[in-house]
Image (tube, rainbow, N blue to C red; front, side):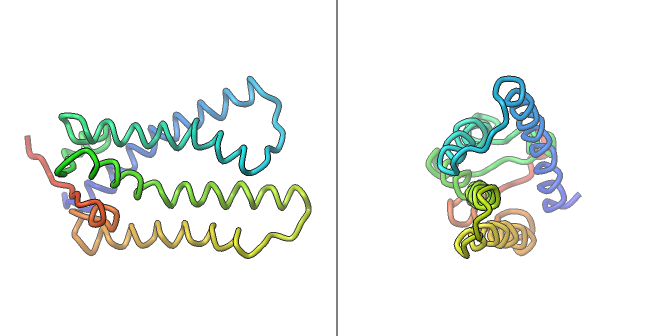
Length: 164
């Protein structure tokens, strides 16, 4: 199995873990609070604290551990090579940056839609920018044959196959 395929499968496994957490969070939100639109800044802060930060910490702490891998990477026998913890923090900051940009765009998109106001161009730019950046990351995965994505290159990290 190629490194690219292993890396994609590792991502899928980790993403299902993240989706399970997000689903639990979503369910708890409806049990605890009545659904009502929040101002986009409040929604951004709440989403960052309850979703993005825990997901970042999941990846960062596991990749910084002695395993140097998330659960998905461990199952696919991959590990992250890096020089220091700052590299791993940068890697995961850059990795989740498109996600957070998308969240920002979505919060403002919903705000303008609910307010029945015209959606400004900058909101559309954010939503498309996040998708473009994610696409560039995905393409870079193939370009480096699975060892590096753009965020790995920028952070000074790489993924390797562990055959033990």
